[in-house]
Length: 176
Image (tube, rainbow, N blue to C red; front, side, top):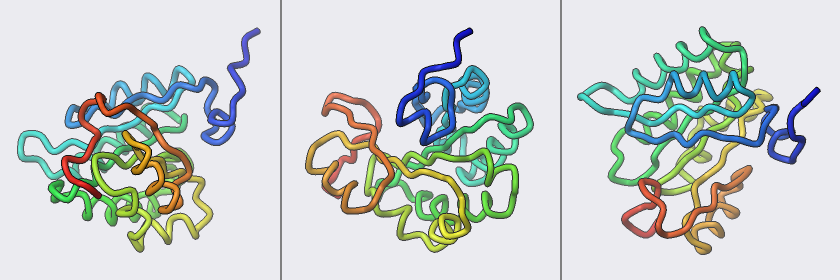
């Protein structure tokens, strides 16, 4: 009987398979997140603010949807570019939202920041409190260049999604 593939990433995230779905913002990915998590990978909610909706309200609603439809681990994405005006609010509001919900504290174990600074989330007081509370949440950041990977290490991220310059949607358009 196949028990899954044991790797450092499966052990770190408590998943069966070393498969993490791309958040693919700004699109809605709550159903994909549930499907990937149910299949033993790690589903990741996208940072979306399409159609004039509040990104923080959409993220909260999507997180509630996920915990209603699976008991498996999942994560979420925040684009931290300076031009992403809702990023600071998400970096403060979502960790607080997770702290206030025991199921989210248990299941939401991964946050991927991208398209900007790897330091925005760790500087957030609510995120610091979430980490200090004993949460197992892991912070990864997308690093499309070596000099950005060095910044991730300096920021103290738990891991990186390392991509080439040709990747789409996750590079910052400015130096961070």
